[in-house]
Length: 469
Image 1 (cartoon, helix red, strand yellow):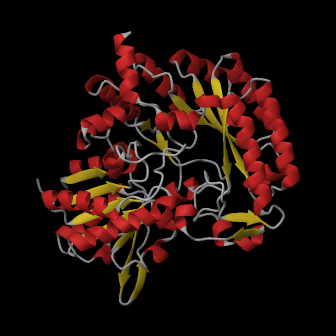
Image 2: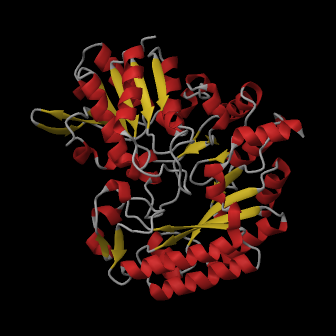
Image 3: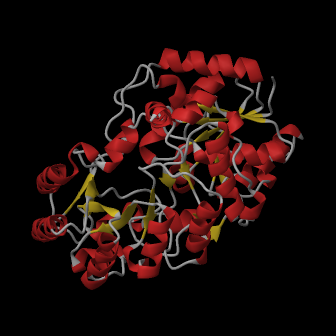
């Protein structure tokens, strides 16, 4: 069946629900632009293994990728193909997809969106096979790109994109933020049903973040926080439970403010609609939004696991991060969760500007103390990466950052081979601090390491077991 548009997610993440392109595809279909979705990870999960973050190990066979793309493009004959570049490390895969699509049909208009290309748009267009970069959220911009292509209008009239024009590269004016109430529950029918049943599906209640952490680009990408309708998220939960006999495994926004109306309405909506939450269900919040009332609400809703970005205990590093949270606030929030027996996972960022061997020793001591006292149940260490869109990427020398490689496949905070280090925290010391953190967390996480658990969780086997018990 022919479609105007095909949206593709990277094969890098094997069993992860491609929420970004699913929301865009659902929106485009509702606007009268027939759109199909190709989750490439679905096709590679049988023959490729994933690492602890759920990311594919090794390189994908290009001939295999070509064959999949050729079959799908032949079947639906799209005028426009959009590739979602969710993570910097995925950019090389996304470019390879674009190149193959142009090989198959040079007339296809190729588009790429996501955080990396939003902030590296001009560099991305050095690849001649890529025609358009979408900057920022994609729904309304992709709709206007499709209308321009199908109506044979100039793309220079579409806001929010970067294109080649007159021998150079042009950024059109930004597209104003759309109304999230226009985005309805995703159409899971766009995906193979067995993929929906097995995938790690993350829900989302809002876009953007109200905070200004310097290592993060959420604020710049989404511009400002905006909430979806509660009905959208609850509908997705109900459809998964009713039609696919599966559930979401958590909420994926950067932080859900536990003092907000969104949070309380969501918890109430889950209870009112008798949504079954799986045991691994989690949400992410900021430790400085935690209240007794909020934790009590979580416990009543059945949410037993929460992630927080403590990131660092060092006042010096926290100040550099622009993360306004004190030791007292961290301790108080952790105690509240512990009283309700809600498991708390914390992320631990190593090698951020302001960090050094002494600060790393201090951090190790504090994290060890919090685990020993039971404030934290799980943890995940990362090595700092100066991602595009941050001042750290744009002005590394101002922060004593030395970037050693622009091989984007290596730009992964899970790696033990960092792409950058600090003048006063050299690479060997960062790696040693990371190894020591991993060793500490392994003692507490064991085989229950949160993100490892998520990436290897066999949803179909779990559901089969629970239905038969």
